[in-house]
Image 1: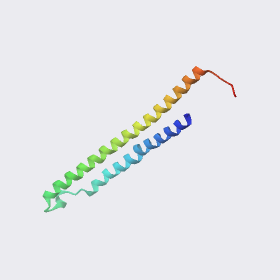
Image 2: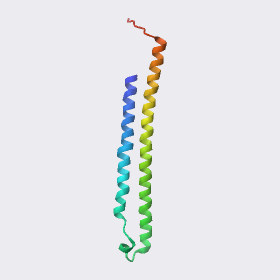
Image 3: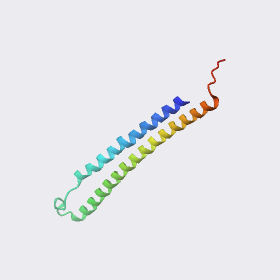
Length: 108
């Protein structure tokens, strides 16, 4: 059972790394790319009314991507904490079982 738990804890750690590294980084990269899509009022020329909505929308999307990156990092941290907790519980249970049973060295 301990081996199965170790495998599951490793899977949780893999998922944690994916959330904390891959997902977080991709969301942050997306938010940075939005800066290149923004243009100034001067560049908008006669399209001043749509420019306001365009920039507001770009800023909103950028803020949500940054927020998503923060939440992805938190998700990764939670998964990592869960993996550690499972391993600690398994170790504690194994120690308690060993203390109760002692060294029962026998075979059938």
